[in-house]
Image (cartoon, rainbow, N blue to C red):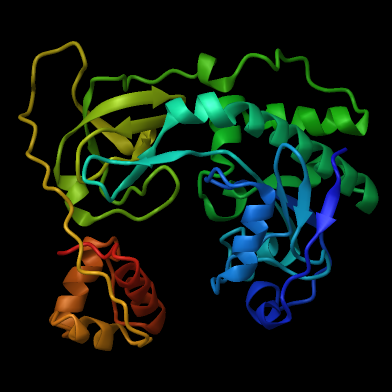
Length: 338
């Protein structure tokens, strides 16, 4: 097995990243949805102030541990449920690569670059994660049933690359192999995407179903649901839409066909507006209201509610947590104009 290197969580971040003692009862597998190394993922996790944390990041060359195994992490999306409070979180690196869309701002999937630069790295990282998982199972005296995925706790489609390109059973078989157990009789070289079928094909015109989130579980602007888009690429359950103002991927189950790729138009395609963002906020105030006022933006509750809706917050009530997320978008220059 590749080396395991431990990096201690900074003392001033323990209250954010791993505030509770934990007796582990399970393992929770994730994909990072980025192209960073294990070292980079742990360093970023330690550096930021977000209540997001995990115990291990695994790449093609090493395993980096960022939290003690007797402390909880925030990775499963189930609040104080068993995923977060009892699960050892393992992030598999190199699962995603992005590029900027035509608007120069929106990040979209770059599968071509991922295949050429990161696919081999991901497959090695996935094997290393399976071997780490097997080691942990042996250390704790657990069986394969203790291996779970992020999706089991919050419904988020994660580990996305593992699920779509390989299949969950493929990963479990890797773990069983490292444990010396008999694996299921499957052709592990056959990827899930080769057997999975969908009526949504490249070139189809589709609408995004109301309430759907992006493929990676991110809320989307309300206007997206009202327009028609062309499918640029389909891989397994993942479909990339190619219009300016969206340029992102969705699960095919969240799309409805308006026009088949080989038929005549059934509905005119709407002109999709280019996303406009508010100016980036460079001040230090933690108040969303003050930040908006400093940019001469109407900070009234009603206007904030409209802004929130445009940025995917459909039930905005003005709570501190909602304002904090909107302020972060404004700080990063990513707050969409209503």
